[in-house]
Length: 361
Figure 1 (cartoon, rainbow, N blue to C red):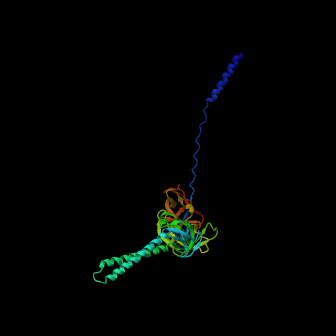
Figure 2 (figure 1 turned 60 degrees about the horizontal axis):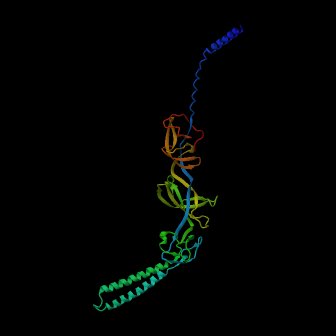
Figure 3 (figure 1 turned 90 degrees about the vertical axis):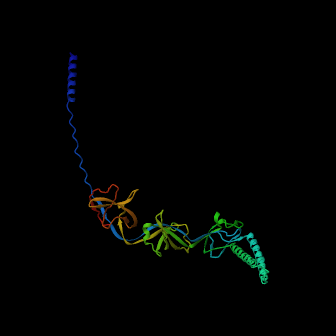
């Protein structure tokens, strides 16, 4: 009897369980679609037109106003070196003396031959006074030989003058690579090492690579200030003197030279300089905030907005002027441009816009 009761209870429980499972689960209702976010208006600023009168920083290098490497003009041995690296010299100062025994012997031989040929020509000239004694051609040959001997003697004497090496201009010896007893000669000019190098450092050249966009208003006589690392905080000045009038196709720059007075010797050739280069243009230039420019690997552009439609306008970056930057391209004064440009603003897209607070000046 107990077994029957247990069996009936288990079966009842099973029926209740199956009945509960047979009830349908409530259907899932789809969530309502999220409301699309309203497109926010982008800030635009007007293109500003105004005269360009500012300065930009350009790199430059100081070089000697004059510089030359001195080589021997005649074969010989160095007898004396009267200067060394760092020596200040004046035009015509004796720097090196060279002895050339072979050159002296050649001159002595040429002088002896000249004397003999002169005697021959004089003797033939005297004999020519007697008709038929000497032919005219024989006399002409003797005179020509004497003239050639004279030219050779003069050339050898002039060559001997090169045995005393003198300074071609006022300057400083910056390199010495010769010592007494060294064999020198004209071949040194081709094979390498000069005896001395002299540079004029009391006056220097400052060579500035001016970008193509700035070369339109370069004027001779205009001063420019610059600084060097060796003298931090101090400003030096140069005056524009020489303009290349040719653009380097590799760097798209033009070389401009400034003369720098260096009488106190604080500057040295080879120093790099940071030049505050004056930039002026006769006509007005167009300006925008730097944030408006979008720079990609393919181009630099700004996003112009006209009647709510986006247009990407290719531009070139110019010089900075305060908080603005000059732009060169198909823009006009008053055009509205996105204050913060982006590649995502595709040409032809429609956008809402508002003029950013505060005028661009």
